[in-house]
Length: 344
Image 1: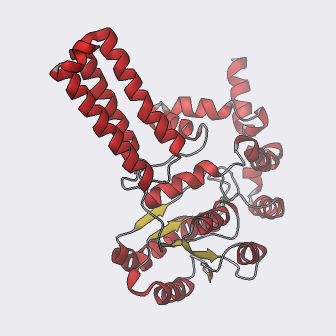
Image 2: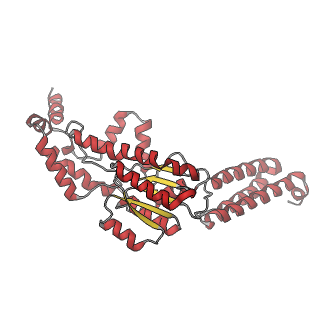
Image 3: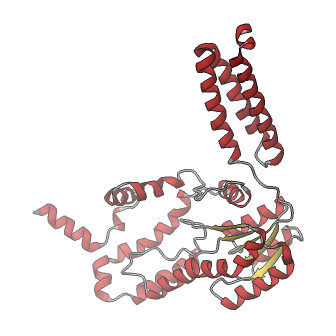
């Protein structure tokens, strides 16, 4: 070790260690990331570097040590968050679910929050008004209503003035009654597109001038089951579906299959984690990170469905989903044809 300390490679190793340590300390001061994690990432490369030098020699150990420091620096750099300061963020769909929790979360961190709600006099809006700080402003905002979007824009513009709006989180969305495409009325398709697509597009286009002023962030959210509705709503949708189907379609699918569609909704909570912390942390990173990701998949196992759908054959994806469903989830016509094939 004495020979290493007196050699140029030894001094280079010390220099790399000092440089990396200073970088970590600056990252800790500027970032909201937990200091314990930063300390771990700063000590681990140093210990590994010493081990590599001791086992691989000065040259090989220094190469490995520098590589580990580089990887650690890239990782820490991606976790550097900008200060909250007086940043203002608009959130759509804040009545319930993720949007409601996000409004509370950002308000608690010091953001100026504009919480767009579908019903300004509803229980969700009243709870936000009661539990959050005076930095939170409620906006009556049905994103399918162009007039309400424009009125919300004028109110936000008046508040932020020349500062601009730092973030827009397009969270509002609906999950309609899950059924085969043939069964759903066209009104369901239109409502889904109006809320989940056209509404988000119009909100984005309307508020982009305020985002340009601050050079801020636009965050678009999509959830497999974030705002899934209520049992009463499902009962109403199921009744409307059953009443609108032609007799031959009902016969082909079978009443057991049609009545069993709602059971899928009832089982959704079993596949979802009630803890929204990973989602909220991902949105915060998207809003404040110096190098935000293009795609976030927070939550345990959430990436698995996307990975299977994107990179595996379609038949494997269908097989995977079928294993999560019961035999009653197969339409009667398909069960009959399968039985006839087996007889042959």
